[in-house]
Length: 271
Image (cartoon, rainbow, N blue to C red):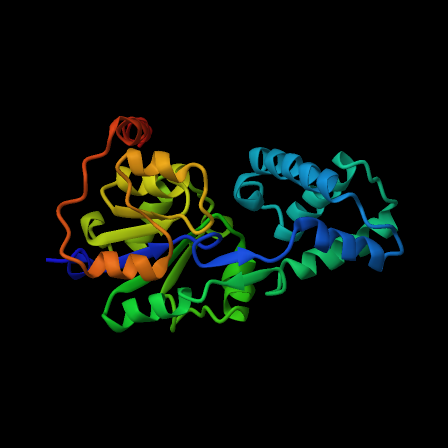
């Protein structure tokens, strides 16, 4: 019996699984700066500045400010401002507001993203077989309401429900976000559910820790993929391969090797 025949729910990550970023972060920050009459910021400094600012904001105000009741636009305004400052660019308030509006608008549209060609057929195929499809993502509300629909990934045709960290106030790798997905799907048992993502820490380990099936995609040939395989995780190149894997008559999922087993144990201790 194939794994697919046992499933009632498949949840999927978004970035790196269904969609990818187009271009570089600096492209969009450069266009925004030029639109306000400023020179293009250095790409490398801007990238590093953003990483630092985003990490700091995510630590202070997780889930895009959910617990603090911070509006999403304000969360991003602070993050973008700090990104420029850390990169060495401190604009006056009027200039920054022009730059910020351009950046916020761009990343709230389909412009910076592309959909992997196998995403839509994979999701539709599952739903045609009567399997519920859910999104589980560390993302804010615009992914649900604007970005995914603009990319042709619509609730009702490609997916049934979404669990977005900025909306529910819980983020990966907290296993609670996967429990919420099971509940939203109709209290489906974890052994009847599969999660697909591209992160061992955020996708595979927490999903497996509550008893879900899980697999990882390695679309970009990451250096970590070999260690994922050695730990016992199924690792596939894309969703076409995932579809084939699901319809095979595989042996029971391999028992996790020490690395994954240790990660699962630590995660379980936090439940």
